[in-house]
Image 1 (cartoon, rainbow, N blue to C red):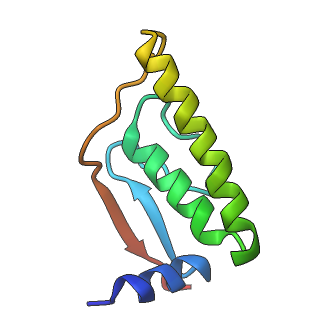
Image 2 (image 1 turned 180 degrees about the vertical axis):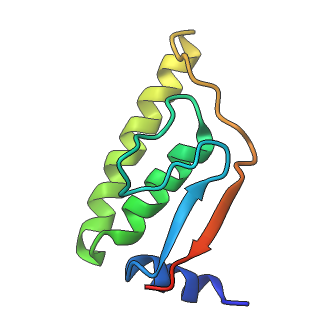
Length: 97
């Protein structure tokens, strides 16, 4: 079984993809993530951050932190229409290419 570091390297090199098991969403595919599915969005953002060059990751993380802060504020005001799942189920498929 591969280590997480090996899996991350495979993802960065395009040898491995993430797929939402419920909606068959895969980042980079023609399909958009399902709006209220935390599994789809986990795959989307994990793929996004894994593929960023190291020099851009800090800025991207700061932007994500701002989005989360705004979502938390919206939730506290009763304006958030999305309910996150505490345990997303993500399946990993290793590509032969």
